[in-house]
Image (cartoon, rainbow, N blue to C red; front, side, top):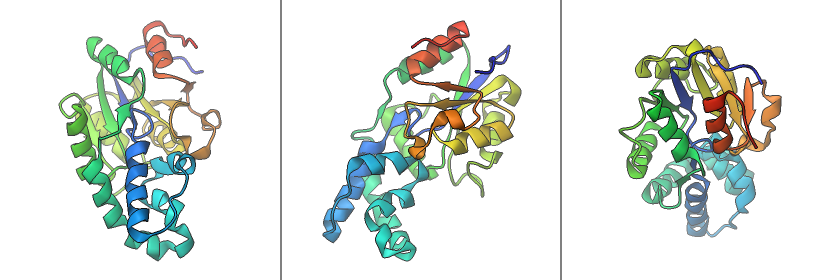
Length: 226
């Protein structure tokens, strides 16, 4: 584990699978769509694993055998079903609220860089009460590019008023580590997320942490606890 920057101005987070356990609502939308079309509902576990990759990855779990045009044709309906129920079962991972409180108490700004479309990101943050707390929110369609491109991370740093070398980028996907590193931030891979079937210890992150509680202790004391 690489030493933390001597001064930390802010922390940027991925959203789904890092701050929020949104898989139950994403799965529920797929379940409804499958029932509308009379097709078998896939098991929850493989869907949960891929939700960080977006709606098309979720849809492939049920409709991938029909080919990419069939998946693409179902995206609009899937997003409508998800938006209707978004936030019903989505919750911050255990310990995240305490972690965000700690950052705010210490005067550290925090923000979000997600590949989720902006209309869904903004509404979800409003529904869970975070819309006025984040210092910056950059969504998947804010720029022409998205993670793993570093541009969204750089934009979030600019909007939050934080210096990349004095900031952390935190995520549960290899793309988060790639984007954060390329933007010049200290990168943290979180093992509590969805992980897209991968091992975060193989992503060359500066640190890998297992729980939000461990993360909070590490920020306070410079070391992690189990």
